[in-house]
Amino acid sequence: MKHVALLQGINLANKRRIAMADLRELMTELGFEDVKTHLQSGNVVFSAGKNANKAAATIERGIAKRFDMKVSVVIRTARELADIVAGNPLPEGEKDGAKLQVVFLSERPGSDPVKDIDDDDFLPEKVVAKGRELYVWYANGMQRSRLARELSKRTSDVPATSRNWNTVTKLCELAG
Image (cartoon, rainbow, N blue to C red; front, side, top):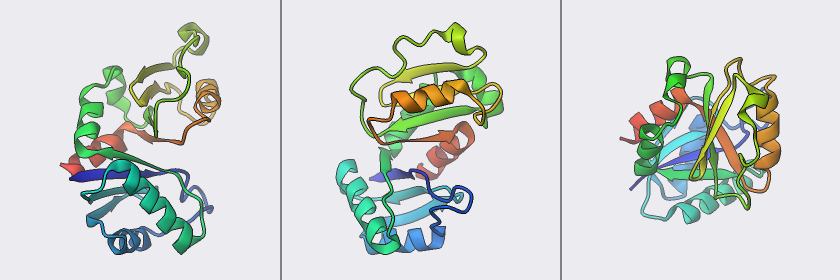
């Protein structure tokens, strides 16, 4: 079964560096097959019979041992990723895929992360929660976004990582 592993917070600036060739090698040593990486930000497409929770834990332990880093890994199956793409509630954001982000949560948080967010307070930005994902439109980019800071606080109780729409659709394509 095809899976996509999304590693949280690696290769940002000069911090927490993992070369993708080394990551592919590790994944293969851990018993995963058909390993492909996309970009330098910790996106891995692979085949495995293991369930997602076991795969994530296996990868996290492998990274800790090999690279001496604690990295959270969020896994989605190829089917789940295809459903995420097909179910985009903010299709207008697809025109500028760098500003449309999907926040992948490892599990549903204890409380609704968008509850009590008044859309008018963050215009022109928007956020929609759907399952274990948050779809976020950062109209002026993510760098100085007040909404990004607010969502970071509201999702801090579960491992999460975000990818822009261009990356999400490319990973979906690679996972087939």
